Length: 140
Image (cartoon, rainbow, N blue to C red; front, side, top):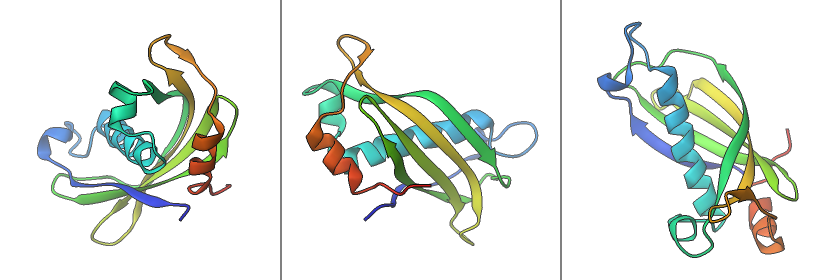
């Protein structure tokens, strides 16, 4: 499977700034939603975050590239995959495309730690989760 679509939506005018394009904060809001999309795909869904395991990946470093403007009314989609799986951390690559022409608009690499939400500390990614994550692993 490797890479999957993790978000699809239309950009609203309220998401744009005085320059007329999507505000930087909205790019990262889309990536945040895409992050929850890929986590759900490998078995860490809403029930595990807010109940159950009480775990979630949390960003500790990001590297982003803005390739082209995004304007109000444009449809976008994101594709995501895992690039690295460590003992307590993993890296996720998210790419945003325009629906109309599949043009790459934005991409970011997020280094994340698996957080124990009760203790508010990084925790070990167990073998089952690592195995599930490997289905979405594409090395750079």
